Image (tube, rainbow, N blue to C red; front, side, top):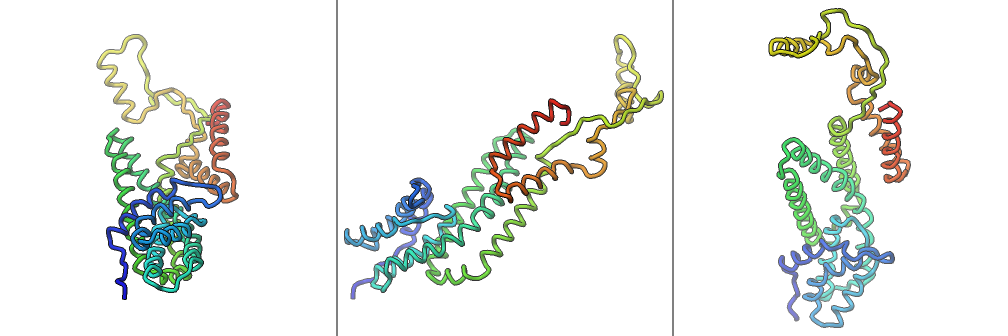
Length: 304
């Protein structure tokens, strides 16, 4: 009886490292198939020493494949397990392997965007940007780069290993409610974090004057005519610190009224509007250009 061919951890690690080029060979007909086949080459060469068998294995992995680039890792793990069984004599045909891939790539693709693009990356980006803006330090971008890649590579490796160990059993988990729970949880966390960041990163001001009133003597700072000496300057600064107005007229803007009601209300409403437009399938590029046009026009008119 021939000795069983077994993929070592080093072999599987090579596949994981090469899977980072999954999107390096896109095409309109079969999407990510080139990057997928490229990732599997080290494993297929070991499992099929015969050139004809290796060519046939590579050919069956040049079929259509498309999913989130990081979520492809568990599918790779399951595929490695199937190919290993097939190479050791198990009755597994090409259609079965392709069927498992197709059956997994659709459901798994749905959790890639909310987990990575809409939760992890915005959170890390906001923290890094805050550090960079606050102190001008290079620590901010370095922190983003290091943490993002540590999380990404750790996810690729551990989920690929999980898929390899579980084999085809993982498809039973996907048929349950696990994916829906992960997606819902990631979406809630992402929206919670983005809601916190709205107040910090989005600023809308309405300078339109809604009311004005002359202040009584003693309610505003009286600036002396001509040159100001040290004593007069000290008095001016003391009056300002005491809360006196800098002008003899109190002006109330629309923004002042909004801030008294709910600070940051306009920014929050704008965020909700953009979310609603995205839900209605309006192009993000169109929304961005519309915001530019409205902002510039509003500034010239005097609304913003």
